[in-house]
Amino acid sequence: MDCILHHFDISPFAEKVRLVFGLKGLAWQSVQIPVVMPKPDLVALTGGYRKTPVLQIGADIYCDTQRIAVELEQRYPARTLFPQGSKGLCLALANWSDAAFFQPGAGLSMGTNADLPEAILRDRREFFNFIDFAALPDELPHLYARFKAQLQLLETMLADGRDYLLGGQPSWADILGYFPVWMCRGNIRGGDTLLAAFPRVLAWEPRIAGLGHGERSELDAEAALASAREQHSIAEVLVLGEAVPGLAAGMPVAVTPEDYGAVPVAGELVRLTHEDIAVRRTDPRAGEVVVHFPRVGYRVEKA
Ligand SMILES: N[C@@H](CCC(=O)N[C@@H](CS)C(=O)NCC(=O)O)C(=O)O
Image (cartoon, rainbow, N blue to C red; front, side, top):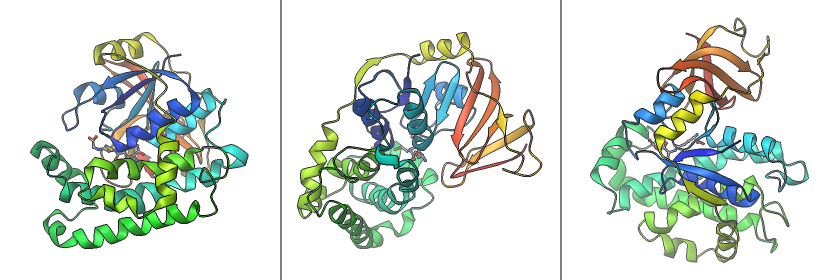
C-alpha cells in the first residue's frame, strides 16, 4: 500500500500533507506536478480536479487535504492526528485556517512576492476568485491587518505556554494553523518581521516544522498512472438515501468544489455520506479509478 503524493514543493496545502507523513513517520512517493495548468497527468487521475495536493493509493485518488488527512488517519492510526477525541473539532478548524487565515496570506503573496514568476500570477489570477487582483495594491494594508489578526489568534491559542494547539501532543489543528505561517516565510514581503511580533508562535513554529516529512522518494507520473491501472479501488459502496435526495449508487453525477478552482469531476456515484463523496470513472491512461472528496466544501448533483 504505497502513498503517492502529487504535489509541488512550494505548495502550502501540500506542506500540510507532508507534515502528516512526518507526524506519522510514513514512507511515501512524491510525484512533482506542474505549478500551473495544464496538468495532464494529474487530471488523468482526478477527472478534472486540478488543485494541489492529491493523494493516490493504488486506484483510489483522494482530493483535498481534509479528505487526505482523514484517509491517512484511517489507514495509519498510530500517532494520531486527532488526539483526545478531537477529530470533529480539528476538521471544523479548516474553515478558519483554509479561508480566514490562508486567503489574506495568499493575497499578500500574490501582491508582494516579487520573485513569483509571471506564469504563476497569470494562472492564479483566474484561479483565486477570493482575490481582487485589480484592487490588490490598495488592499495590501488591509490584507496585512487581516493576516496579523489571525497570527494573534494563534498566539492566543498558545498563550498558556502549551507546546501544541490542543495541549501536549501535535495534531491536525497544529498543521492547519501552521501552513499559513509556512507560506508567510519567504513568500510575503516583511513576513519574518510580521512573525517576530508573536513570540509564542515563533517558539511553536520549529516544533511543527520539526515533525519533518517522513521518508520521501521520487516517482515519475507515468509510474503513478501505471500503479493506478494495475490496481483496484478498495472503496466500499455506500450512498445514504437522505444525504442528497434523488441520488443513488451508480448514478452519473458531477462533484465540484464550492470555492475556487470549481472544475466538475464526472463519474458514477460510489459514496455519498455526511463525511465523504466518491465517484468511479474510467480513464484511458489511469484505468478505472475512484476519486474521493470530503463532503464539506463540495457540491454533488446529477450529471
Ligand atoms: N481545499 C483544497 C485547497 C488546495 C489549494 O488551494 N491548493 C493550491 C496550492 S497551495 C492550488 O491548488 N493552487 C493551484 C494549483 O496548484 O494549480 C485542499 O484543502 O486541498
